[in-house]
Image (cartoon, rainbow, N blue to C red):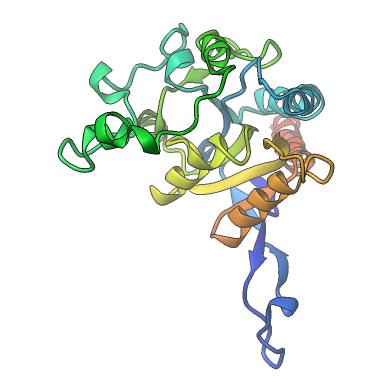
Length: 267
């Protein structure tokens, strides 16, 4: 059993304490999870980001946090599922192929409303289009070259999923209920993708973000404080999801391995 203490934000207060924002605080739970019911979700762990500060943090977190965590997971038998998005997944030999070609597109719009021209800002709706950026063509070219970060390539036997429906089908097949997320970016893909924390939580899974194995895209106002990243972590903790540090999972996995080895000695 994997023993961890997931952190959440407690909106409640104890009896006799004034129910005010100032009196709310973090709290933790005591979980014991069967290893076969849990998985690490490595989300959008790509090799390139166009913002240099974001790329720097991604490289640092990847090398010093995610890689050691995944190595411990592999040694301990905790499953790692790679979710790099449709473009990267369908080209990878370890793609699980549990969705058909017609099921890859997301989101799926109502064909009648809103009008297609409105969605694509065409025709009468062109004036509502997001402003053109002079470097957009270069960025789109780089996006077409997406690939796994060289330190986070799936190892032999690890599964690659393309979207949220496929992640759900795979978890259903394997009996996985607890999803621990690592990857990027905290304030976009982690919370917005259909295989990310919000949508998988809405499907009923217990979702936990490994809070030191992620970073977001910061603004000129937050680049020094990382408040964008911190705010999303807090948001998840405030909305029935959880966070945990990588070291906590690693210690829990070390304990599991120790129990297994002691059991072998006593046989």
